[in-house]
Image (cartoon, rainbow, N blue to C red; front, side):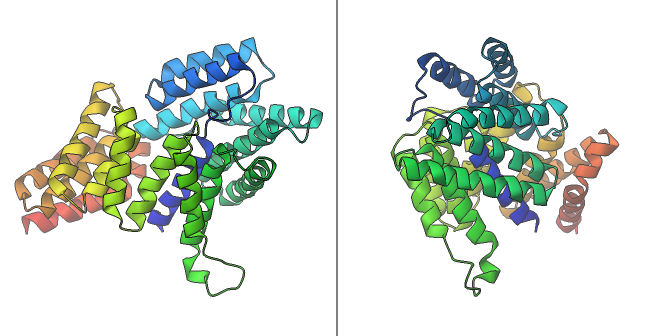
Length: 341
């Protein structure tokens, strides 16, 4: 269940992180500001991105995506650093983005951009509800978001930004409901989902890098590790310091070259240290992954060392963080006992 929960959240990460580029927004200044601000998020300059979007909200308060991407910067930072998603500003800004999008639609219900803004806002709210494990709210907003993306492609089949959301949804929905595929109303749309994501990637839409990211995890899910490595390395040529892509590459290499995987996970961990990340959640996740991989190659000493470091860290974190890591710490203890016995 945990694996499928992660895939479910991954689906919404991709939907809600979509950006506007190939179908450049008609206002050149807005398009330029979007390009600048979202690049800051991708390159992990989260605080600067928050500052930029906060200024833009004051400058042009009726445009919904300033609020949306202010929330996106906070979400991306929390996801990357392994922090809690408890900032009230996240939900408030997502709700403001949806409200402003609906107001724009009242003026012009056929405007493809306004439809897209509303769908994107609902996609973010779906993701936020998923993080809070409010699955009913998440599915409600998520299905409505998909309807909006489909409207965009009906109005303009070349609106490639919408295909990322559609492709992600079709693949992961089919993947999660495979056990019900014998029912007539549960069709297998995994191939259609992949096709949509490839279309978005190949047409260089502003969110094509997110199509690449999701395709990486789809290829891993389908055990097509060579394809996952190839597409991740392509993304890292454009964004060499982005942990989001490096993590997918490291995971793919676990099945091909564990030593290479260990090197990549170590680079991610050192990158977090370099950024001054104080939260220990991702540190423990990465160290456990390293311990597991060292055990696979028979290096028991390094594996035990990682386990000991994790258990030491766990003794010095607050009760809330310890609760989040409870299952992982149990696995660390189990792995260590297996290694020493």
